[in-house]
Length: 421
Ligand SMILES: C[S@@+](CC[C@H](N)C(=O)[O-])C[C@H]1O[C@@H](n2cnc3c(N)ncnc32)[C@H](O)[C@@H]1O
Image 1 (cartoon, protein in one colour):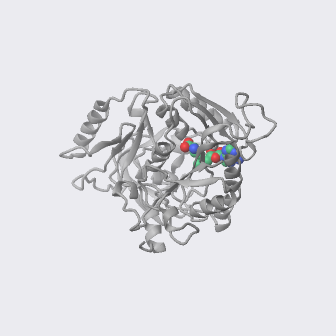
Image 2: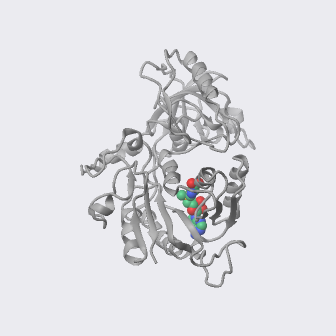
Image 3: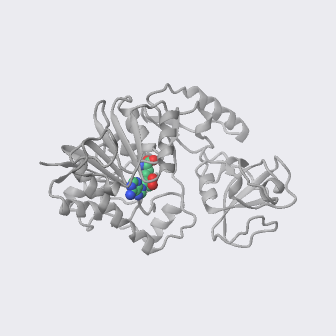
């Protein structure tokens, strides 16, 4: 295992993934000519001799690569400042939405080409007219679609696309879901797609997704099962569960029932069945997905992060409560998949070690397909256990080499267990 220096890790986290990944809806037919035609028109605009490479890892996972190095755009000197979240989205190939625009020069004109900069300090005031003197990072170039009155006039609630991104500094193509018919594709990070593959949902299985909103993994499970599993999706508020329903409707899924409920209390001996929603009786589900609330420190790129160590440490408690509940509602012989989109050991390897110690009925099994790296050493798991889990990140470990595609995504962790009698 090669030790990763803190600065190296920080650098990795500050950069976007090198690929864009889409999950393809297995219940619909994907027409790749839409993508092909779009990329061809983009390559004309950018003067590229070829379109970026794209391929399927599995039929439900499309990978899109960056433009080649020959594709460049000259800076215009017309700087627009956007907030850090917006800048991160641009680096991943998004357009700039109006609420993210902080500083716009007064002499800009519509359709003018502008340079997009992210505010790295969070000090830029909304409506700034002059040059921003704080730390900023160039994230891409685009065409201006809105002027100051639409963004900053009194009483205006800015919405819609303010800058049409042409080329992000990352050279990722600007392709989003709206290019395709509704519900056909979903922009999803590669490890999240792998998480669905680890769950391996099948028709007729009774599955609980404990922390499901907005339903990106729920819908994957439904599609994998050909819409024939019995899937119960829970999240803590009605607003969040409404999102699950919306996404299922959009993707043509009918096998999911969602409930707003606190999953730390989702098991009760008094419950008579799963049909009336939570709480559920013990030993009810063939499979449980616990995509836990976490510190989210695996997200890339992170241009600014205001999370304190105390905030990072605060997730352990709820993760433990959720695991305890998952073990109760899982059938003997059933499978539990635990995942996070963070890189901290305490929420990942540490949580697996805690669960194995606390619940003797849990047995760690290979989180197959094993596409990410092994768990970190010296964090409570022995080499055999480390090799059963998968950690997506920049680490290099002889225990399991990792393809660049999986190394260059976001930071993520997946472990799988079965419940013994
Ligand atoms: C990582 S996100 C889930 C993402 C989701 N699985 C997906 O792929 O779209 C974690 C979710 O946990 C939910 N959550 C947090 N505490 C919860 C609780 N006590 N009960 C149920 N859901 C909870 C949050 O609202 C959030 O939607």
